[in-house]
Length: 134
Image (cartoon, one colour):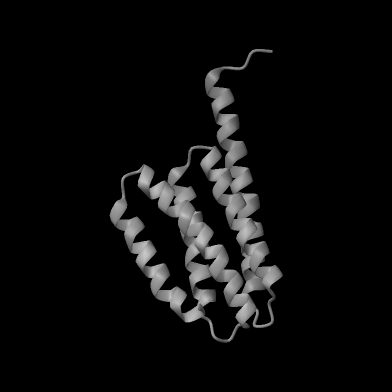
């Protein structure tokens, strides 16, 4: 059976939208666990993995804006957790390590698009907040 290009394309777009919707639910569930005062480094890693999965889904589908948005949201939350003195030192160190990775991915994507100022700003912000952990 031959399918028109338009039908095939619409199917792929619908598939992507459903996948984003599904992983968005996973994101909010992981974020809810992270919002609890008694969350563990395992919850942090699960949140990180979910956000990275979301970002990868967006990147594989050519959705650069959503890719940067997902990474940016993750990075911002990791920075928040790095400086959250209510968390244990091990938890904050895990957030620091994960934030370094997201910073690398964000800066790489921003460099590709030529947004050096934003990449530099993210790096300065990370260094400023990293001193709280170390």
